[in-house]
Image (cartoon, rainbow, N blue to C red; front, side):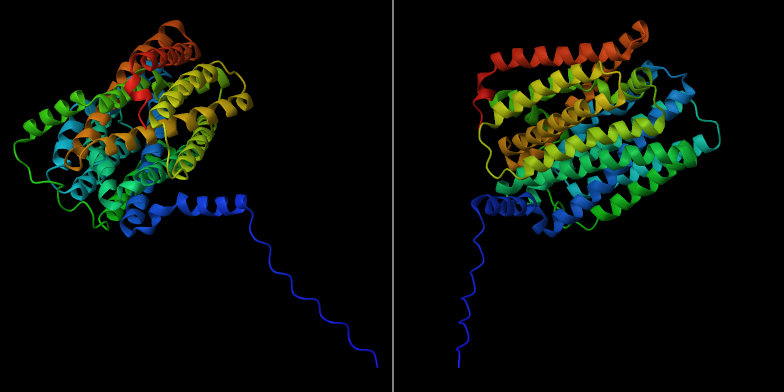
Length: 429
């Protein structure tokens, strides 16, 4: 009788290749900050808050175009009203963040934004909205944002350890960049169906939800150090540190240059889209979504990097690419051709901002992080200095694309000059 053939031994499962192992570990490292409960609530609150802000930005711009006869200069004025409070309210917010509950300041800011946006929605709904209403409420919204933003950034160092800080900031910015994909497209399409007033009412409710999410966070309930003087004294001490520390000085100056010469497209995108591509609100929303997709890729990629070296050099390179991509995209006249340029612009912008904020927090002592975030926020007050002249140039010449081209070229040149003049930042690891 024939013996049955022996059963071949079961083959061992193949070992994962080094590449597969690295990818798996990379995926885990990319989302490591989500292990912390407070970070999950913080991320959720930031996500809905920035969704509301992105929807509000598109809706407000479309409302201004309607009531100001498609004026790019009017868009620049609205940007100025929102950004101007950053120059002084953020300093107060930063000093308060180092003295009282960061969590409370964030909830107050979100609730204030909900109230102000509801007022604008009501004015629009009743048909009595005027340009000055948009400016005044934009100023109030900007003040609430400037009050809360230093706390929103500084509280991350109380939620995660310093070794995870770049990951936490990158993931937070990734959430913000996801809203740049969702928010503009959602607002652009909803305007068609429920009008600008309907979208603004929706934005107001979303801000309230963000405040409720932030209330669930346990961290940030107490200040990092007991106050030793008045608010003015704290603000002065923050400036002394920022000026005396060479590395911090370089990071802040480069941030200022990027805002001064590279942020004009935020205010002028609606006018550029109409002039260069002849699109409506839904088409503008898609363009902003494309740029948000590039930003999301950039911040997720940065979150996956566990130990970056030569951070100063990376910061300079991304700022340089920001200027070049802005100059290139401004001259595109075809919708599909604009897509790759917008993706690159969003990517380098997001990597620069995330890395810049990480370096500011790492370079600052814990008891001064709120003030450093506030000084960083001050640079956003330079947006009017960017939007106003380039908006005026577009108005006079009748060409928003050419105004954006000049903006990108100036950022490129300024970055190259700073690269040569600040060796400390180049060598910063």
